[in-house]
Picture 1 (tube, rainbow, N blue to C red):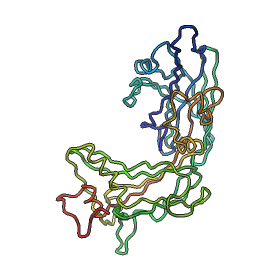
Picture 2 (cartoon, rainbow, N blue to C red):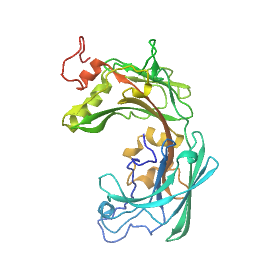
Picture 3 (cartoon, one colour):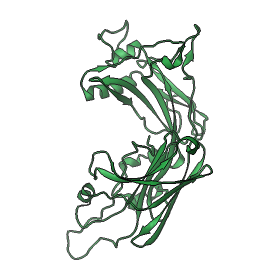
Length: 353
């Protein structure tokens, strides 16, 4: 899933109109002030980012134009209202963006939400954008309700062991595992498993997931969108295959130090592997659940209006997420199958299923 954070989704919408092969008529519509707004709030982040772009139709190759020009909009005033507070955004220019077909810099608007200004789970927030456009004053609004934290069941940790020491749960990913959690106020969910390790001496990560967005239990538990408790099945070796593909893709030497261990001080336990469940608000769930990322693009204004929650004729996405994570250990067999043991000797009975 996606947050209004430093690594926000690399979603950008540009609308281009086709030219007829005939020179008898022109299909470019008159220029209008239509803006694309993108933001996903995350109460666990200390900064929230908003991107505002203008729909454009240049006389030429639209993709080439977007690659050579920063089409995000500056000079606007943004406010975020909710939780009894009003936040004013600051503008930051020349922010690097992911490599792709668009300009490698962008202008973003930033809300600072740390300490007493933190966003409240379960709270409703309204985004207001104002400024001057080519057709006069503009005023854009959007609203989201931040989900409460999904609560993982049976993964409270660190665990207090019978000997009075602490440890984390051990997962045998060579076997089938069920992830159970209480949904809270979230509408859609995804699961990620993140491995932290060293590649060529530098800290790096490998992820399994995120999974596709789901609204009901998958292959386990109560199959209802209204169930308070949801269950997601991780098939045997599925996580290991996903991690192994990522580990092999980057190449180089790697090292991993996360043997199951115990300690009287839980802060001394090795934190290098965790399971994370992310909850999305109702609109973001609709967007993700309908596989719209593949459909967002040139036809947005034609047949995707139902996935827009920005006021007026403007388009885009204003949503919110919340997540919880639990640290775990990986079984010796799982580490071997994922290529994380040295020397490479399989534990007894350890094999691909």
